[in-house]
Image (cartoon, rainbow, N blue to C red):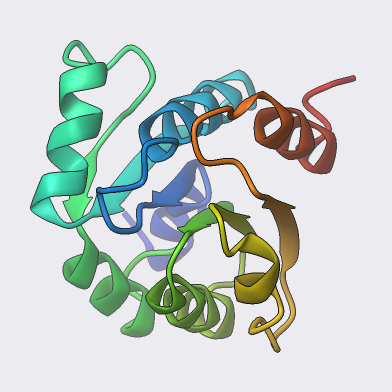
Length: 159
């Protein structure tokens, strides 16, 4: 397989980068995005710490929506080293550290980057984003339907 072939394979994936696992809305949002990526013909790859990945795994044990699950740090390393890239990367942000991860993904990925900012401090966190990316921002903590509708609108999934 040539590097060109490997590059096109990578572009058939979409990344969902999870934040801290304590956010109640995160698993629902991740599965919603995974469903949308599958409808686009992309394999959803979920990156997160072990606890965040375990919550997604419990919600989708047969992997109907989610594809591969990878360690967050290993995912970032593979992006930085240009070993892997994604057609689209969703970074779920509900803490300041998520903004840093989104900035890193945006600076090294050739694909589309969507920052999904949610939680009680969503507006304040969105204000910290000083790099180019698409943004979906909602104060969603438990009620995620408005956030899902905004994601659908940004991705054109509502058409």
